[in-house]
Length: 124
Image 1 (tube, rainbow, N blue to C red):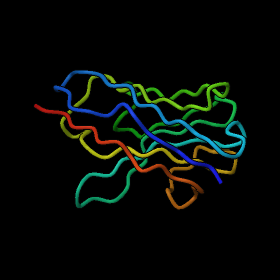
Image 2: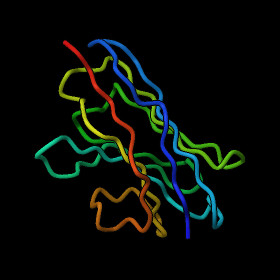
Image 3: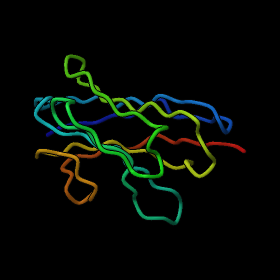
């Protein structure tokens, strides 16, 4: 089992920045690829970014490419999502997930463990 807890969400104006964190506990964090997803009310869960277990490879949704950066610190059992140039359409609950595979999966069904999420609201 892996437990995931997100933090860092909040209310920010358009153009602003937030840094989300996802702290993991339980089984060895470094064996898991990690992903960030988001879900807005009435919409399906959407892939945002993913990173392999080593941090050597990353993948991004086209909608966030160039604005968001995913990273991880295996010594701290934490994965991050730096979000810059935020837009109102980025408003959603952001969830981190762990994938017991190579990683960079965009399909949420491929992930084995999920956090509860943190709300990000971007005002115009």
